[in-house]
Image 1 (tube, rainbow, N blue to C red):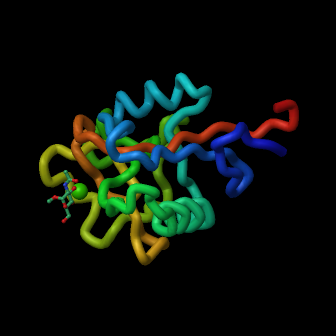
Image 2: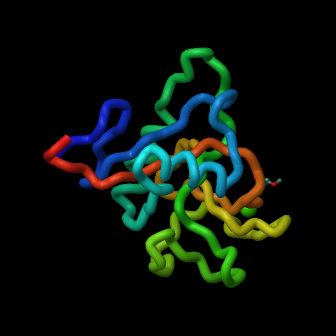
Length: 146
Ligand code: 2F8
Ligand code: CA
């Protein structure tokens, strides 16, 4: 099973991370569009193993510009349709959430979810306003034909 160059194989799937703060911080919808153009969709993190892998990778990433990585990464999870009902982009309802303590708090109409770099990879999500500019994580199925 293979992933395209620039993509990371993890938990039986391929992931693409935008690590550059200056180039790639966009709204949740903008992130989704860019991700779709790459042939994927925003990441669906529906297992503890996936969340630990993704959060650990983000947390251990060393920014070449040595700037602090402080912003979050959009994932394919939203409660825009019905407040408090979190759904993945594949239409499935969230069963197990890996939210930071106190999240999701919907403090200022926050309907989109993001992973934040954390020392504790077990809980790393926050709900943020969908028009907030963040980085993003794209996911694509691996293929042996690539
Ligand atoms: O303390 C958690 C809180 O931090 C920020 O608000 C001050 C986040 N806001 C944005 O990311 C825009 C909240 O989502 C978060 O709950
Ligand atoms: Ca929040």
